[in-house]
Length: 203
Image 1: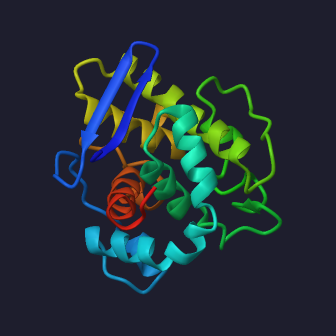
Image 2: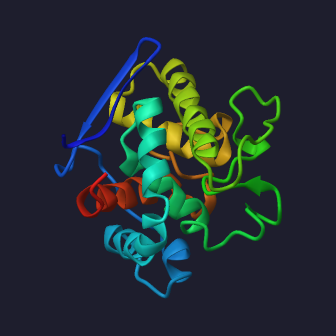
Protein backbone atom coordinates (compact mmCIF):
# COMPACT_ATOMS: atom_id res chain seq x y z
CA UNK A 1 0.00 0.00 0.00
CA UNK A 2 1.14 3.56 -0.66
CA UNK A 3 -1.05 4.98 2.11
CA UNK A 4 0.79 7.09 4.65
CA UNK A 5 -2.23 6.85 6.91
CA UNK A 6 -5.26 4.65 6.48
CA UNK A 7 -7.49 4.38 9.50
CA UNK A 8 -11.05 4.66 10.73
CA UNK A 9 -11.29 6.57 13.99
CA UNK A 10 -14.87 6.98 15.13
CA UNK A 11 -16.50 8.55 12.06
CA UNK A 12 -13.25 9.77 10.53
CA UNK A 13 -11.51 8.12 7.62
CA UNK A 14 -8.23 9.36 6.23
CA UNK A 15 -6.29 8.11 3.24
CA UNK A 16 -3.11 9.87 2.23
CA UNK A 17 -1.17 8.61 -0.74
CA UNK A 18 2.57 8.46 -1.18
CA UNK A 19 4.86 8.97 -3.02
CA UNK A 20 2.61 11.60 -4.62
CA UNK A 21 2.71 15.11 -3.19
CA UNK A 22 -0.92 15.29 -2.11
CA UNK A 23 0.23 16.29 1.38
CA UNK A 24 1.94 19.60 0.88
CA UNK A 25 4.96 20.18 3.06
CA UNK A 26 7.69 22.76 3.24
CA UNK A 27 9.88 20.50 5.40
CA UNK A 28 12.16 21.69 8.17
CA UNK A 29 12.72 25.31 9.08
CA UNK A 30 16.18 26.82 9.17
CA UNK A 31 16.02 26.68 12.97
CA UNK A 32 15.33 22.94 13.06
CA UNK A 33 17.76 22.04 10.29
CA UNK A 34 20.55 24.08 11.89
CA UNK A 35 20.75 21.54 14.70
CA UNK A 36 22.29 19.13 12.19
CA UNK A 37 24.09 21.84 10.22
CA UNK A 38 21.74 21.29 7.31
CA UNK A 39 19.83 23.57 5.01
CA UNK A 40 16.08 24.04 5.51
CA UNK A 41 13.26 22.48 3.52
CA UNK A 42 12.20 19.00 2.53
CA UNK A 43 15.77 17.88 1.83
CA UNK A 44 16.79 18.88 5.34
CA UNK A 45 13.95 16.81 6.80
CA UNK A 46 14.89 13.84 4.66
CA UNK A 47 18.52 14.04 5.73
CA UNK A 48 17.57 14.15 9.42
CA UNK A 49 15.34 11.12 8.90
CA UNK A 50 18.25 9.35 7.19
CA UNK A 51 20.59 10.21 10.06
CA UNK A 52 18.12 8.58 12.47
CA UNK A 53 17.59 5.47 10.32
CA UNK A 54 19.93 3.03 12.07
CA UNK A 55 18.52 3.94 15.47
CA UNK A 56 14.97 3.75 14.10
CA UNK A 57 15.54 0.20 12.90
CA UNK A 58 15.88 -0.93 16.53
CA UNK A 59 12.25 0.05 17.05
CA UNK A 60 10.88 -1.20 13.76
CA UNK A 61 8.94 -4.07 15.30
CA UNK A 62 7.17 -2.01 17.95
CA UNK A 63 6.48 0.80 15.47
CA UNK A 64 4.82 -1.74 13.20
CA UNK A 65 2.83 -3.19 16.10
CA UNK A 66 1.59 0.25 17.19
CA UNK A 67 0.64 1.09 13.62
CA UNK A 68 -1.37 -2.09 13.31
CA UNK A 69 -3.09 -1.55 16.65
CA UNK A 70 -4.06 2.03 15.84
CA UNK A 71 -4.56 1.60 12.07
CA UNK A 72 -1.93 4.23 11.36
CA UNK A 73 0.87 3.76 8.89
CA UNK A 74 4.12 3.11 10.78
CA UNK A 75 5.90 5.70 8.65
CA UNK A 76 3.96 8.48 10.36
CA UNK A 77 4.87 7.12 13.79
CA UNK A 78 8.51 6.95 12.69
CA UNK A 79 8.34 10.55 11.48
CA UNK A 80 7.18 11.72 14.90
CA UNK A 81 9.79 9.60 16.69
CA UNK A 82 12.51 11.12 14.52
CA UNK A 83 11.35 14.66 15.20
CA UNK A 84 10.59 14.21 18.90
CA UNK A 85 13.57 12.22 20.16
CA UNK A 86 15.81 11.53 17.15
CA UNK A 87 14.87 7.87 17.61
CA UNK A 88 15.82 8.00 21.28
CA UNK A 89 19.15 9.75 20.81
CA UNK A 90 18.09 12.91 22.64
CA UNK A 91 16.62 11.15 25.69
CA UNK A 92 18.14 10.84 29.14
CA UNK A 93 16.70 7.93 31.10
CA UNK A 94 13.83 7.85 28.63
CA UNK A 95 12.93 11.52 29.07
CA UNK A 96 13.45 14.68 27.08
CA UNK A 97 12.49 18.35 27.18
CA UNK A 98 14.30 18.82 30.51
CA UNK A 99 12.50 15.82 31.96
CA UNK A 100 9.02 17.07 31.11
CA UNK A 101 8.23 14.60 28.33
CA UNK A 102 8.47 10.82 28.17
CA UNK A 103 9.55 8.27 25.63
CA UNK A 104 10.33 8.01 21.95
CA UNK A 105 7.24 10.09 21.06
CA UNK A 106 7.61 12.47 24.03
CA UNK A 107 4.27 12.17 25.80
CA UNK A 108 3.68 15.14 28.08
CA UNK A 109 0.80 17.08 29.59
CA UNK A 110 1.16 19.81 26.97
CA UNK A 111 -0.22 17.46 24.30
CA UNK A 112 -3.33 16.24 26.12
CA UNK A 113 -6.47 17.10 24.11
CA UNK A 114 -8.53 17.17 27.30
CA UNK A 115 -5.90 19.20 29.21
CA UNK A 116 -6.29 16.75 32.06
CA UNK A 117 -2.72 15.56 32.27
CA UNK A 118 -1.38 12.27 31.03
CA UNK A 119 0.23 9.46 32.94
CA UNK A 120 2.69 7.75 30.57
CA UNK A 121 2.27 4.00 30.17
CA UNK A 122 4.90 1.37 29.50
CA UNK A 123 8.61 1.94 29.29
CA UNK A 124 9.99 4.77 27.17
CA UNK A 125 10.81 2.39 24.30
CA UNK A 126 7.76 0.10 24.52
CA UNK A 127 4.90 -0.60 22.16
CA UNK A 128 2.53 0.51 24.94
CA UNK A 129 4.13 3.96 24.87
CA UNK A 130 3.85 4.19 21.09
CA UNK A 131 0.20 3.15 21.17
CA UNK A 132 -0.60 5.74 23.84
CA UNK A 133 1.10 8.51 21.89
CA UNK A 134 -0.49 7.50 18.59
CA UNK A 135 -3.94 7.51 20.19
CA UNK A 136 -3.26 11.06 21.40
CA UNK A 137 -2.56 12.03 17.79
CA UNK A 138 -5.80 10.37 16.68
CA UNK A 139 -7.72 12.29 19.34
CA UNK A 140 -6.32 15.52 17.98
CA UNK A 141 -7.58 14.64 14.51
CA UNK A 142 -11.11 14.56 15.90
CA UNK A 143 -10.54 17.87 17.71
CA UNK A 144 -9.14 19.58 14.62
CA UNK A 145 -11.90 18.14 12.43
CA UNK A 146 -14.53 19.67 14.70
CA UNK A 147 -12.65 22.96 14.97
CA UNK A 148 -12.10 23.31 11.22
CA UNK A 149 -14.90 21.38 9.45
CA UNK A 150 -14.14 22.95 6.07
CA UNK A 151 -10.58 21.59 5.97
CA UNK A 152 -9.83 18.50 3.92
CA UNK A 153 -8.44 15.28 5.39
CA UNK A 154 -4.81 16.17 4.67
CA UNK A 155 -5.24 19.53 6.39
CA UNK A 156 -6.87 17.85 9.39
CA UNK A 157 -3.88 15.53 9.66
CA UNK A 158 -1.35 18.36 9.55
CA UNK A 159 -3.40 20.32 12.07
CA UNK A 160 -3.44 17.31 14.38
CA UNK A 161 0.31 16.84 14.05
CA UNK A 162 0.83 20.51 14.95
CA UNK A 163 -1.56 20.13 17.90
CA UNK A 164 0.39 17.08 19.08
CA UNK A 165 3.33 19.42 19.51
CA UNK A 166 1.71 22.56 20.95
CA UNK A 167 -1.96 21.87 21.62
CA UNK A 168 -5.05 22.42 19.48
CA UNK A 169 -5.60 25.91 20.94
CA UNK A 170 -2.52 27.03 19.05
CA UNK A 171 -3.82 25.85 15.67
CA UNK A 172 -5.68 28.89 14.36
CA UNK A 173 -5.61 28.53 10.58
CA UNK A 174 -4.16 26.19 7.99
CA UNK A 175 -1.95 28.94 6.59
CA UNK A 176 -0.36 29.40 10.02
CA UNK A 177 -0.62 25.78 11.14
CA UNK A 178 2.97 25.71 12.41
CA UNK A 179 3.17 29.29 13.65
CA UNK A 180 3.19 28.25 17.32
CA UNK A 181 5.00 24.93 16.97
CA UNK A 182 8.59 24.27 17.96
CA UNK A 183 10.80 25.62 15.19
CA UNK A 184 7.63 26.92 13.47
CA UNK A 185 7.72 23.82 11.25
CA UNK A 186 6.59 20.81 13.28
CA UNK A 187 3.82 19.37 11.09
CA UNK A 188 5.67 20.13 7.86
CA UNK A 189 8.87 18.56 9.14
CA UNK A 190 7.10 15.45 10.49
CA UNK A 191 5.27 14.92 7.20
CA UNK A 192 8.51 15.21 5.21
CA UNK A 193 10.29 12.77 7.52
CA UNK A 194 7.36 10.35 7.37
CA UNK A 195 7.41 10.46 3.58
CA UNK A 196 11.11 9.54 3.66
CA UNK A 197 10.51 6.61 6.02
CA UNK A 198 7.65 5.43 3.84
CA UNK A 199 10.08 5.11 0.97
CA UNK A 200 13.09 3.83 2.90
CA UNK A 201 11.83 1.54 5.67
CA UNK A 202 9.90 -1.58 4.77
CA UNK A 203 7.34 -1.78 7.54
